[in-house]
Length: 327
Image 1 (cartoon, rainbow, N blue to C red):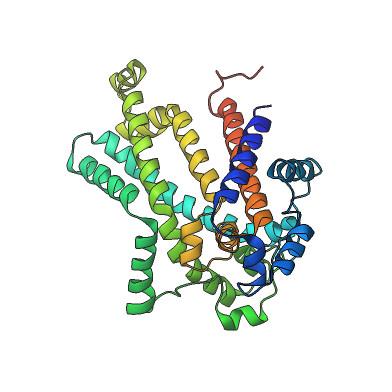
Image 2 (cartoon, rainbow, N blue to C red; image 1 turned 90 degrees about the vertical axis):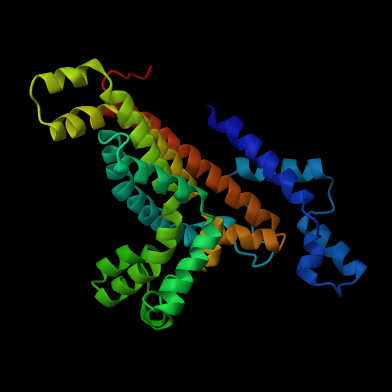
């Protein structure tokens, strides 16, 4: 039941903030040379001439009917736009969170096991840098190094122009579609295009995961049952990975769920810098063009996705720790 108040608050917030942005969507659509009559007619057609409370109630009424509306610019239904763009965001989010977990969890475990050592200091310093680096600066730096200077990787997009002309996606997930079609060339091309945006997007989750894993592991390693396990002669690796890490999973899973939910919401800066056709760049374009239905529908979808991911994480607690029961 907590989902409804959250969604209500988000809809009210995004509706209000959009109307506070300077500029008129009707003028943005028609151009600066549009006559007053044309602007008034378009506002009446789009329902923008109604009082704001009525516009908000109409928006809520459409949501209750699972209707996100249509784009003011393209006229395409928002649900259709989301279905076309969401696979790109999901693919990017999976790649970014995979990098974060593959590097962040071992780094956090080793830092906790070697507390106050050079490895611990290096991990914490690296995580601090990862959180502090501006995503747009890191993305542009990676493009300059790997795409412009060394020319190892493509700078933007999901596929090269040549591959995009002949490749017909099935599901919208290009890596999966390339496997289903057994097209190794497209698979390699999609991986190459995914590397830079995924690496850029993974820096903050990687840093956060490493710090949370270290903190959770240090708390567990100080428990009596860990000292008992060591006193029984169990190997250090067995103590750390079987006993300590297993009992530190709850805060780690919470962090992973929050980070993954935010990534699925669409990384606006990363997708914009790398021209990645996902939810984030789509919402950004909607903000620039004052396309109210796009921004409103996109933000609502992001909110639902974020809440759903965290709900799944909460449910997973009972499987991770049998002592937790839901009633």
